[in-house]
Image (spheres, rainbow, N blue to C red):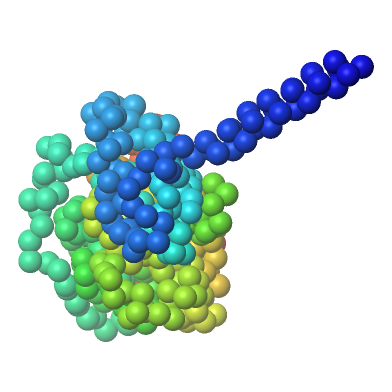
Length: 365
């Protein structure tokens, strides 16, 4: 009987030591970083360090890394960031990584293709070459119908597709406002979206606020850079989770959440608008769509998942070519569907929320 008790005590002690050792090694890499826990957090340095380390360990030219980024580069990035003592959590949802630092601030890695430095093909260089002095454009017609063509990513994708869209709409008698890059800043988004057509070509992603690997909101990038003063300049928006830092490649931009639209645009403010977000993930869920629809928009459309930029650009031109010929939103989305082989592999479709019967009316005979 005493022998049994002794063996039981020995087993219990060993079990306690094993469990204790396991718990103490739950995040073994967190002890390997040199930055002390009470040091000022260098957010950008930490993010870039993770990118540099992980990218070197992955063959980014591999086609499967492009088609299935979340199973390769992004999962490794998520693991690395979760091992860092300055990061409370890193959460991967589809192709966006939400990083929450221990000081409560967030950074979202939104565009996997920029992170992989994939802009080096002949087609992509053609888009670079198409950029000229076209950062702003304004035309006025007597109809009163206005189309906003917003291109915060002109620096990266060019403007050729926007020119084609503008020409189509000019022929229909629309007033055109074209803005690009930093001109599409947060104050503009807050006060100037009162238009019949809102087309925006930019970056987008998801925000996982609580780290449960589920998206809480779609966020959309502006052309305004995120700086050290952003939190102070836009204190109200920042504290009320209307904006978040969105990182594309090595650049950080202000990205707005549905809460920004809900606050600055009341029911009926948008004149039965068609909102076309030519971005990745715009219709991954209905969070951003509902914000626009509740403010008076008739329909909100965009891609369900990631999209390749040349597919996005070409299908945008095709969509407006169909719109001006009388097709409604539902028909256009059905016709374009995936838009090409890359989006098919990414399982990304052009879809909509709201009134699928919405059409661009013929304004000029």
